[in-house]
Image 1 (tube, rainbow, N blue to C red):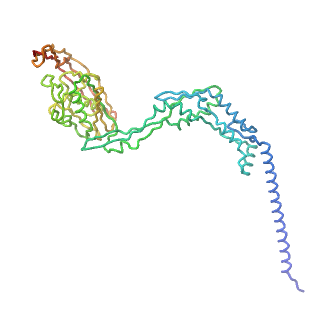
Image 2 (cartoon, helix red, strand yellow):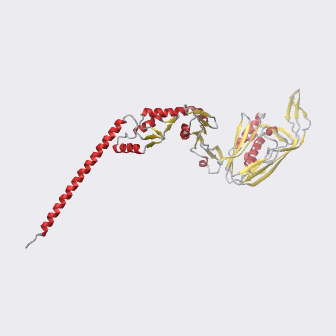
Length: 481
């Protein structure tokens, strides 16, 4: 008896494979049909939904807390325009150091961006992307879709309204200038930051109040400073010099009204010759040495000077106006003064804008004005002469190191009246001519103190004493016939 087992096994495998293939085909066509059915039903539902809400926003869509579902774009736009009208009387008070501007919300059309919000709400579910649209419509129907409110204002109207203030705020940056020729600064200018009204920051600030202003039931007043943007120069002071000359550390000023032309000329000449001098760290500055020869040979004209107890015409009259003004700048800078001398009598020029006692005379080579640069950087001396207003200013530039200067008000004691007027015959003057050559001045002792502190510690304390003699008025009386 013979049994063929392999043939039976082969028939079984073929039969099983056919069943599996049949099941797979059935599953494929069933799934495909189901998907097509779902797509058809979904597509039909989307078409029906879009047709039903053809010109309206789909249900379940919100702008902020406002339900805009089922409304047309125009309805939504009208709704937010109405909200804006309720806030049109609210005001923005924009302050600055230059002026104050008050602008109503209505003037700049401030409020909800109605057209944008209406269009955004309407376009949800209408992108043209089938899956995205179905997803958003379903989400809106089940849980809601929430849009953030969008706000706007008329930038052109705001800019036009603020233009007068913007022009006052506007300041162009200034590039630094620093030129040295033969160890003297011939051109100097500190860099300065410019400024401008910061329109972007202003707009952001205004929009930041949108919610509180538009939700309020009554008109609001919102005040804040106008934001100002700093404009940095292309060339800063630090870039043009490595000497530490970057800021003002001391200044002094004096007036010289009623000066004769020769004196005005000499003040201008001497101050210009000192302008631009650099004083190194640790160096002692000498006024006499820096100015050099003071005579007609070096360009000076004749003006009144104090010589041998008298006021007479001499070369360089008026240079003491320069030394006095520089002395005041040195005091203000908190620098140690090595040498200083008071005038023989109280000179009216030096008290035109200052108490008595804050002066310094020079007479080369025996009477000098000296100070020491005890800072860690160079000091630049700069002068400014205003010939229209007869004013002289000295500015000292360097690097501030924390010095604080306190000066007491000068104390005047032991005042003595001037001697009687003196008349002297002068055969060079016509008869009847009277010419005053000296002016009366009261004698007095004047003193003041200066305290300089640094980091809370006293580094300088000095007392300046001036012993002014009483001065006699002298008149020349013409005798020439």
